[in-house]
Length: 151
Picture 1 (cartoon, rainbow, N blue to C red):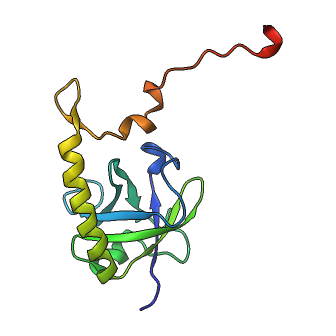
Picture 2 (picture 1 turned 60 degrees about the vertical axis):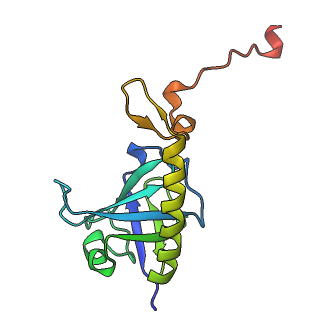
C-alpha cells in the first residue's frame, strides 16, 4: 500500500499546536452535512473533540499530501492518521491502513464511552470534557511572582 499523507488545518482556531506531537494518533470523521464543504473531514482527538479539518483548498493543501476531496472516497465514515510533521499552521499526517484504523477506532469508542461517564456538567447544562480546561488559557489563574531583585 502506498503511503497517503494529508494536511490538517484550522487547529489554531481551537487549541493551537499545544495538544500535538509527532507519532500521535488523530481521528478523522466525514462531515457530509457541513455547510461550507460537502467533502469536509473533521480531525478530532479523544477528550478534546474537534481540533481542525483536512485541508481541501489548493492554497492550504501542502504539496505531496492529498486534499480532503481526494481522500473522501478512501474510507467509509471514519479513519485514523498519525502525525508526522508539525508546522505553525499545518499538521502533516499519514493515513493508516483500514485494519489499523479499525483497531484504533475500537479503542477510541471504548475510551470515549468511559470519558462521557466521567464528564461533569457545565454551568449551562452541557457536558464538558475533563481535559478541556487544560487547554483553555482564559480560565487559567495568573500566579503573582515577585522577582528576586525586588525583594
